[in-house]
Length: 194
Image (cartoon, rainbow, N blue to C red; front, side, top):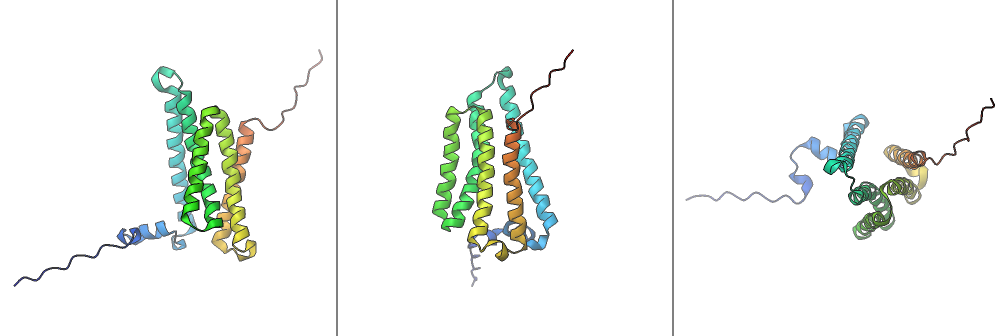
C-alpha cells in the first residue's frame, strides 16, 4: 500500500513566494535594514535609471549615421518625464481616494498627456515642462500627505525623512528646469569705453 504524498499548498501572495528574508525585508521596506542601506539602494536605482535614459538619448542622437530622429526623441522625452509625473500624480490620487482604480487612472491620464504633448512640443521644451510638472506633482504629493495624515505633528520619523526628500527632490527639479532654460535673468553686457 502506497501513501500519497500531499501536494504542497500554493502560496497566497507574491511575498510568500520569495524565499529570502532579506529580499522580503527590502520589498516590504523594513527599517530594520537601516537608513544607510535604503539610501544605497536608492542611489543604485537612481544611477541605473540615469544610465539607461542617457544611453537611449545618446543612441537617438547618433543613430543612423548621425541623422536625428526628432519624433523618437520627443516620444522618449515624453516617456522619461511622463512616468515620474504619472507616479507622483498617482501618489496624490492614492492619498486622496485611497483606492486603486483612481490611482491607476490618474497615472494613465498623466502618462498619456505627456505622450500627446510630444506630438506638438519639441523635445527640449517637453523636457523643461516635464521637469517642472514632475517637481510640482512631487511637492503636491508631500503636501497632500502632510495635509491628510494629520500634519507635521502626526508624522513619525520616517515620514519626516520621506517628506523632506520629496520636497528637496521637487524643488531640485523645478530649479534645475529653470536653470537649464535660462530662466534667471542675465545682466546685460557692459560696454567698455575706449
